[in-house]
Image 1 (cartoon, rainbow, N blue to C red):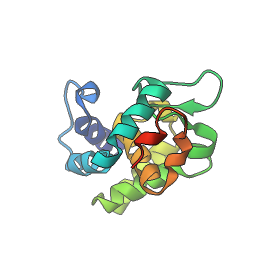
Image 2 (spheres, rainbow, N blue to C red):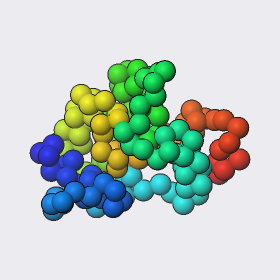
Image 3 (cartoon, one colour):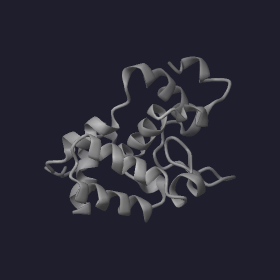
Image 4 (spheres, helix red, strand yellow):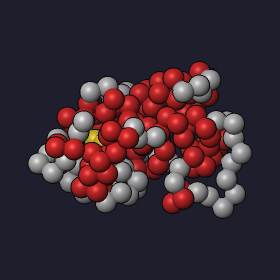
Length: 147
């Protein structure tokens, strides 16, 4: 089940996340929709991604627990139970069955953020931003781009 969901995430991502033999999972459309950054947030997201990780999903901050494209702090976003639940909730909202979402949540809970497939990192970013959490990326360079 997890392999199919990861395959769906990889299939749903941009070309840089495609695999040689992409999954034909029925959940690919759900992952693609859940991970899509709303148009009004794209300029902000591009700025944050560039400043935080140069767009690298595997980025790891050498001086903190921040990881991934969006540099989520591992201790506060993953270990304390927030981000993987937010991702699962957003996937359910887009039609992923509850049991499959629970499998994804568990996989993400057991995996460092920098090793999450890109679509799950993006889904987490979208969930945080749309819930009013864009302030986690406040800084002099991107604030003016937030809608």
